[in-house]
Structures are given as structure tokens and as C-alpha cells.
Image (cartoon, rainbow, N blue to C red):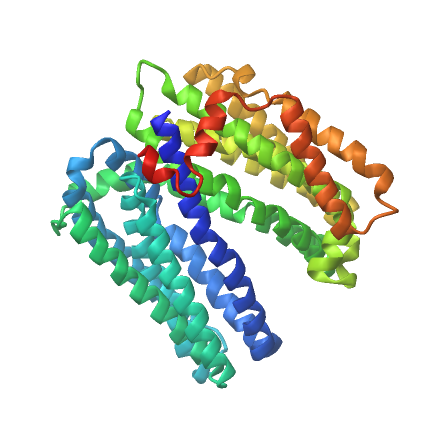
Length: 482
């Protein structure tokens, strides 16, 4: 029970920091787009996309590996931090060199090359190192330090960037803001790390580097394929049907992609615990995964229902009337969280138990299936074909992950059965369907949520242990129960 309470508190801490990012960074993006215009915003988006891809490549999956290894062997923190900081710094500098070469080879004006390079540098070097340090905090299950540095980064980037943009500094101002946020937050991370976790021992250990890279590579492949999953469909739709239909698919897919922050936040707190208990004989990992999947089902199902019921209203509210045709894609994609919110915890469970090759095989297989299906469906069905291929791939991903979890870890699928949240979501939808024409979106959505929560309680979805966990994370309860 204490483990569950600790995990729940860490999730709340991460979500608290994530709320600031979820609010401020979209506002900052809108401000950037308005102040720079289409050409400047395009250059900014190019630098950001290139930097993020190189950030994933430069990490090589090391943060995930560090969390798993340090969670079970915390006495080795000085060696891991020291040796891998040097390695991560070298890969970051190499990535910065690639960004400089790409910018130099493109036909961009000389006054934009430096700010674009600084934007890339802030990500691949400074943010890259901070993400590595945050992995150490995750391994020690002290997510409050990660949330603090993330908050410093967001507030500085938003504050400095907005001020410089309003003063007319344009792309240069944005690059300075990103550098300030990344450098200062990295400094905060480093100070906390050295004072709370221990002094790192910086060495040049090639044998250790090779061992870590070999172990981390599957994590790196998983991260890269996951990042490119939706972009692949967008590129294929653009090639077959043009940029207009690609934009329609991307607009619907981005809504689903934004929801991935929920299981990602949850598993950031759960993964260190799974790594720490390892292959314990008491099978605590099974109970943890059962509860995680249960809670994620309770969260994902109402989201799916709301998107299915209000797809046109959501598209119109977020993107405007010109994107309304994307509602058919959103209707199809709305079912994805039903599957992804279940297989994501199972993948992290396999990763924590040194079975990352299995999860890599599953992700690569389903990514390949998605490409094949999109090649077959997109020429005839356009963006709707891409949505169908994505959904089928997600269903296949859940089926394959369930099979691997049962075959290699004896996690029976019945442990993950959540018929009560599904029945509650269906009941709420039945309540709202007759009211769709009588109430506007803002009036009907609260009715759906209230109906869903009421059905969850009536079905007694939560047991006594669930309620003790919920109560333990309420304000004022943490200190007394610690």
C-alpha cells in the first residue's frame, strides 16, 4: 500500500509540472506563430523538429536504461552519472554539429542561421543533459526535483520569450529564451543532483560506454519509432493525396497524441518501482500493473466517449471551420486510447524486467503493419485510410503485447479486464445521445462526465484499497500518512 501511495504522489507531482507546460507552451507557440508569420514560424518549426529527432538519436535510449539500472542499484549513482554525463555531452555536441551542417547547407539567410542553430543547441545539448539528470531523479523516485527544473525551464522560456517577441526581437529572441530556459534548468538539475544524490565521478570508460549503449539501443529504437509513428502516415497521405488531406489527418491525430501524456506521466512514476522490485517472488508487479491499467481505463474511456460524441465540435473549437472534414478521422482515432492506455504499461513492465527486445519487436512489427496498411488504404481512402490503418495497428499492438506479457511474464489478460469502466462509459453515452440536439457542447460534456462518474460509483468500480490510495494523496494527507 505504501508503494502505491508513493507512486500516486509522484504522479501528482509530475502532473502538476505538466499542467504548466500544457498551458504555457501552446500559448507560447501561438504567440510565436503570430509574431513571426508563416515563413518565420516555418523556420522555427524546422529547427525544432530537427533538434527533437537528433535529441532522441543522441539519447540512444540512455535515460530509460539509467532509470532501470539505478532504481535497482542506487549505490552506483556516482559512476552512472559521471561516466554517462561525459558520453551524453559528446553525443549532444555531435548532434549540434549535424544541426550546424544542415543549416549551413540549406538556402537560409545568414541572419537566421545563428538563431536556428541556438534553438537546436538548446535542445540537443542542454535539454538532452537535463533529461539524463531527470532520469536519475526518476530512478530515486524523487520526481519533485524533476518537476522543479521543468517548471524553471517553462517559466523562463515563456517569460523571456514572450518579452523579447513583444519587443520585436523575433527569431533571435526565441533562440535566446530557449537557451536561457535550458541552461538555467540544467544548472538547477546539476546542483540538486550533486547535493542530494552524490558527487559524480567523471571518467573516460569506453568499455562501460559500449555496455550501456548496447543495453540502451532497444530503448532508443522504441523511442524513435514511437515518435515517427504518426508522422509516417502524414507523409504517406501527403504523397498520395496532397498536403490538404495530410493536414486533416495530422489535426485529428495530434488530439490523440496529446492524450498520450496521461499514460506517459503515469509510467514515469511507475517504471522506477517496477525496476526496483525486479523479479520479486511476491509478484507485486502484477498487482501494480493491474491497478495502473484499471485507473488508466477509467481515464481513457470517458475521453474516447467525449471524442466520439463531440468530434465536430472539438475539431471546430481547436482548429476552426476549415478543418471540420477531419471529424471522420477523429471518430476512428478516438478508439486508440482504449488500446494504447493498456499496452503502454505492459511495454514498460517488459522493459523493467530486461525484456526490452520483446517490446521493441512488438513496436517495430506494428509500425511496419501500419505502413503496409497505409500504403494500401491511403491511395483510395485518403486521410480516412490512414486513420483506419493507425487504429488497426493499435489493436494489433495490444494483442501482441498481451500475448508477449502472458507468454514471457505470466500476466494473464483477465487481470486487465475492466468491464465496469467500459459499461459506465457506454451508459454515459446512452444518456447523452438523446440530448445532443438540445444542449451545446459546453453543456453536454459535464452531463457526460457526471453520468460516467455516477455509473463508476454505482458499479462499485473502486475497492477499499483504491479509496485508501485516493485519500492518501489528498492535500494535507501526505504528511500525516508518510
